[in-house]
Length: 123
Image (cartoon, rainbow, N blue to C red; front, side, top):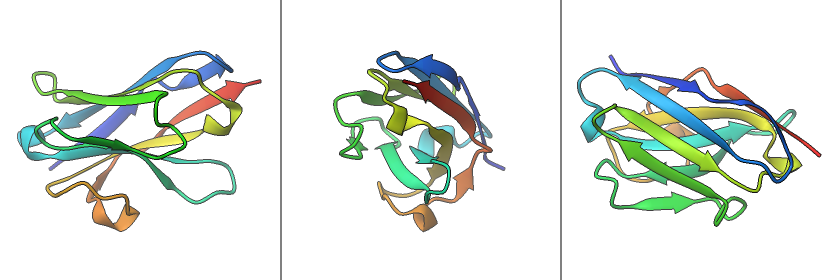
């Protein structure tokens, strides 16, 4: 059973930084592509960033490109989202997702989901 668990959310001022973590239980972490999605109040859940199972490919939503970095540590079975120069528009619940597949931006493409962690950016 694969279960992502997010941590690292919190309150930060605009322009600040935050690092989210996603720990994945189970023995198959190395075979999983990982991604981060977010959902703001009253908005639909949207793709933020993704990383392939090997870590060789990453991709980002245009709104976070150049500010956010996704990476993974296979020894710790953990994926991370480093967020810099945060803006009020980044305020949302951030969800970690995983699957044994390619890099897709659609919510329906991802199999395993965490419970989410709240990120609030104050202006």
